[in-house]
Length: 233
Image (cartoon, rainbow, N blue to C red; front, side, top):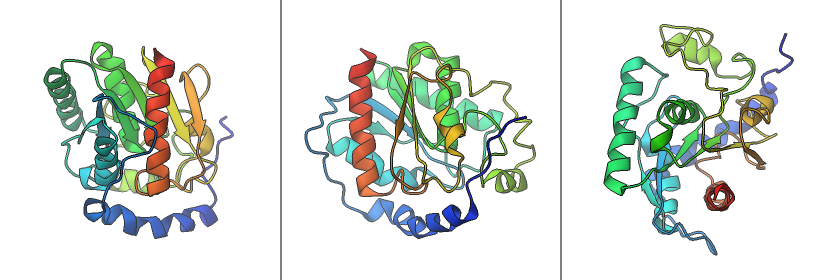
């Protein structure tokens, strides 16, 4: 029996103020991250549940301002994972790889990290590195404060997703798990994973909803992407 438990509701309520920065993401001005250079490297970014590429707008534009080539997922409003939506993600990955002439980094926030890990499992030749942000890829699928919402808006349970792929299996390339003890949505153990499930884990001091919306978090994550690109070489 897994010992992982969802974060306490006291942490969940502390997430709520960060919904405003997420909604305002497309309107906020991006700034380059000092002493970091993306060197034109492509990054394909996947948003979390009940959101779209608008939620990752500031994150992507910060990556762009820092010298990366950042791409939206073009998956629309995500409510979960379906075979049809995942096929669109596969097409998008192939499109970005062909356009850039090289494999991109996959950067997934929460649910988006599940897309990133499974894409990397299925298409290792098209992925340079995987970075997940507060993604519940490991352990008990009920050790979070989002599974009831997920099941309410999808036609399957979290224990019986439409894809047979196991997101806990480490993809062939360098795989990084970014996690936080302050996460009010996902149990830290599930976002951190075990040594067999990822190559590196990086703890950050941010709320779940802040991971892709807080300027400080975005700067930290941009630096992590660059640092881990170097580590993967």
